[in-house]
Amino acid sequence: MMGRFLGLAAGIAVVSIGMAGIVGRTADNVAASASEQAQDNSNWTTQRRQSGGWSSATAAASGAGEVRLGRAADSHFYADAEIDGRNVRMMVDSGASIVALTRRDAEAIGINVDDLPIGGSASTAGGIVSMRPVMLDSIEVDGIEVRGVQAAVIDADMGVSLLGQSFLSKLDAVNVEGDTMTLR
Image 1 (cartoon, rainbow, N blue to C red):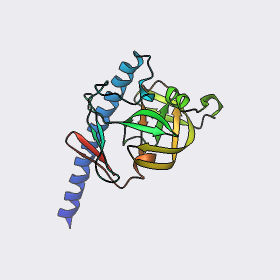
Image 2: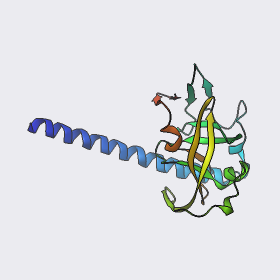
Image 3: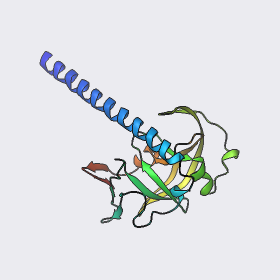
């Protein structure tokens, strides 16, 4: 009995240390990415990526309801999403509770951000920021569509919108193997 308890405690400690390392690396990468993106004033996130675009990430439908995303040079996975009929380039972030839209992306898809009430705050790599909750009719990533998705417009310059758990948790599976993320 004691051996099982010690084995379980050791397993929990290893997982906790591993998760802390992942979270630390993700926070540093998000902050660095946001800083780099702030220097570029173009609205690349609302334009579908062209061949030879800014990253090496690729998305391809493979089979019914399966999308494969390639890891970008910055180690993140990006998806060209269609939100309420408009294209938005998003970073897939399984650590984000909800879909988080930049003000620029929200306005590009037709949301009047100033009409949304501030509905709380979020803790980010850059500190505490205000957020404005909104319900999106749909988000589609290469044929995989989720309807009625909770989201928030973040009142800070994140650089890129995040495809978080309010979308990802409604999928059958999200797997990462090597440099490929598969959404089903």
